[in-house]
Length: 193
Image (cartoon, rainbow, N blue to C red; front, side, top):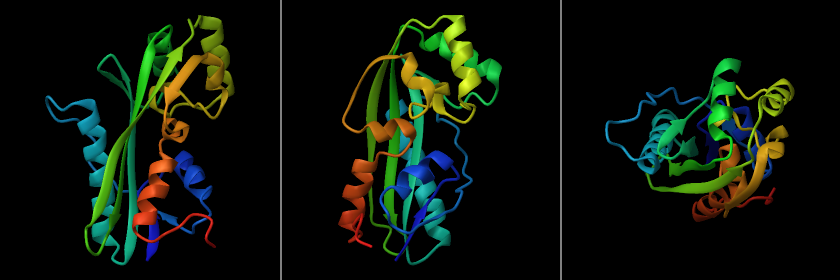
């Protein structure tokens, strides 16, 4: 069975590469609108399943990984800022606050539609961020395609007071501990090649 990452994210691609399992990336191209009254956990879980399902339906003989991540600031979703101005505003909102990064994951067999899915939460407690620190961070890291403008594997670590969670890779958009667990259920082992 082929392994497919249902994503165009370079960050997810880099993370999955660490498992040393050959895979290809296919962008799922789905509607990512949040449903009315949908909880944040249900939202990211639904999107990760939808991404995996879309790619699986077009690629028989595959194991497909779908993932979606948002930052949850007291119930308000902070997605990708897309502009530097939006990134600055997001970082001002994060200042001195606790933010939960919620990452939905789905690993699916395209032939049987058997799947495993979960939501992985990771909490970051941010320092008080002044304008100088925010501008310096934005000048060093390209965060326009990162949830809440946070690229923790880059310079964002300088903005953090502390972190709490089971899998730090989930902050980067792909919870590798769960990915490994689910792939093993399909008979795919990391570092086996």
